[in-house]
Image (cartoon, rainbow, N blue to C red):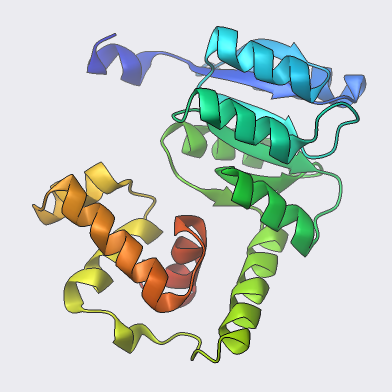
Length: 223
């Protein structure tokens, strides 16, 4: 598929949730969007992993808690098979453990199930472009955990003075949702150099991943 075709092709979505009414309703609402195609639905995590492997959707909407295979484990298995797939985790109620388990599994985003459908559509579109998406509640929990870890490691929260000028530039681009290749192109550096800058930023700020780095940067006005 050419670049032009990729840009005009609909976003292929797989919906995985064990609650039939919620799953079918969400799938129908998403399918009503002109740029989204719901390729399949799954009522459990194991079926979700199988369908994701067979159909290779762009985005998977994944329930966090299912009886056969939980969202984090299913997410981890899907990404092991197809690292380019984007997974958005859905849950009834979010707490710190839920958010951490989803993000540690590699989820691109995290939303409550009562998120307005317009916001879900925006999140799906953002995920398809590789942009992280966290609901406000999830963002607050992540930030709280980051602050806690800063205290535990006796690090100064918000210590941006540890970063070089180039690392600050990279952090700004992370906050805009750019991937390493896009950062490299924007700054006229190699993708490997961009990756090294990202790793150094995470290490210096004590952040577990680029999602948290993006939130960290936005909260400090670096976007």
